[in-house]
Amino acid sequence: MRLGLWLAVAATAAAAGSGLAAAPAQAAEPLPVKVMIVSMFGPEGGVWQKHLPLTEAITVPGLSPDYPQVHCAAEGVCLLTTGMGEANAAASVSALVFSGRFDLRKTYWLVAGIAGINPHYGTLGSAAWAHYLVDWGLQWELDEREAPTSWPTGYTGINTQNPDQKPPLDYKTEVFALNPALQARAYTLSKDVKLADTPAAAKARADYPPPGNAAPSVIECDTLTGDTWWSGTKLGERAETWTKLLTDGAGKYCTTQQEDNATYEVLTRATSAGLADDQRVAVLRAGSDFDRAAPGGDNATNLLRYAEQGGFLIALDNLYRAGNPLVQAIVSDWPDWENGVPKE
Image 1: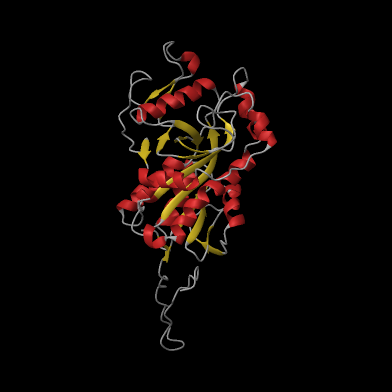
Image 2 (image 1 turned 45 degrees about the vertical axis):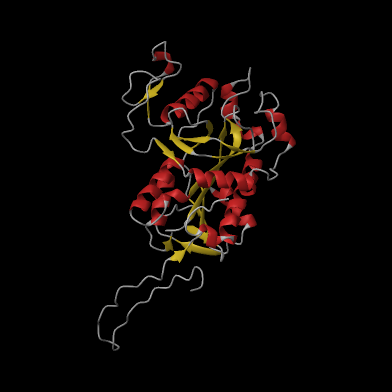
């Protein structure tokens, strides 16, 4: 069947004028997908559309009204744009996986988006493959001015007595660990690619200590999900502590974004329903702005003028540069990847 040819077959009345209602439409066979790229807003998706022949547009009910179509290529690669934030990500990925229009049982998912970057691990344009997805929003909060003086910020885990106590993971979405074999393979395939950089980004990072002042590179470190944009050294330190707390010391907070725990939870539910495989999910986040000011800098300025840091365009470009080697490896060597991540 030609890619994207979604035709319904409706039964008609046996004879003209019989008055019989048409039989329910029969859906076409679900389209097998080898790689589903997940972006969150137009510019993120646009970088893939610029480079890949995603010429087939498939409308799926329930997707974001801003991005109502999935774009696919004949090679079995598709692109979904969810809309920004946890609610949009959950709604759009749910609409996709439960639409019945795609066969996603063997699909590899590449979540690829820009993010704030922790200068302790990366810099503007750095492309980070995550192992852990940690939810920042599932905490209790007091205004820092009213919190106990022993607390470094106003945050503590839900149903804890102090910020250093690991909370019970009652929501079941506080932290996810991705397939380490897939993450390792994604990193190996991309670690030597040449990433984009600009003089503007170099100038913006010059006041940070290493590695924040270095040229962008492909790195391995973890991502924090939360709909609230934030900036600051104290919050950044809390993000590092929170990540370690929820991962029993193994996680390294590196990027901050708004969607990934929501996206992954949908895929775990789809996996339970036999519709997807959550062991085939890779998350790549590229730093578009720093999560805190440089030493001696102003955090309000860092937040309010985030777009002036010069990282946006190179982060978009580096999503493709770092992510495409994995996409192409899967597609070109599908017999090796079809039944799981191959050994190197």
